[in-house]
Image (cartoon, rainbow, N blue to C red; front, side):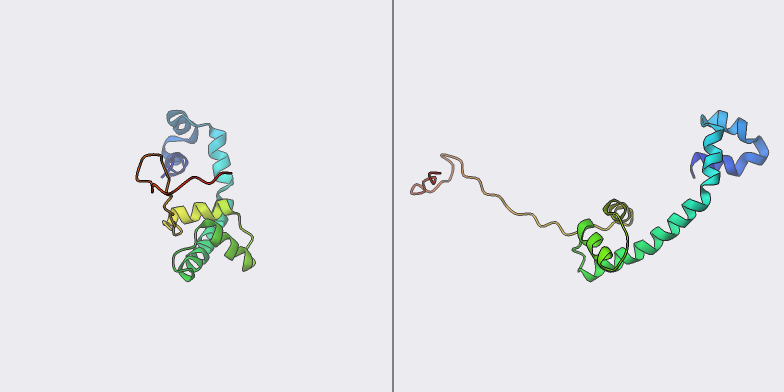
Length: 122
């Protein structure tokens, strides 16, 4: 529950102005939050549908596809989606791509280096 939800729940008993003063928020912010509730509900419904599609793409890739791969797959399927939105949704549902880490070998003089090996002139 955020502060605006608290104000909405208790506004009949205490009044919006008093609650906003106590909580340190502007009354205009509370009014704006109330006006934008339908847009938030629409976006949450769209995110729920996109979440199902992202889960499907992730499952089909054997849990290897990350944000770039999932975004590309969704775009191929005709979905207009931004990679940041995909990243936010994947983070919220706990999905991550497979990280392939390569081992880098460094040659340092005097440490376990083959005596016959010479650095190429270049």
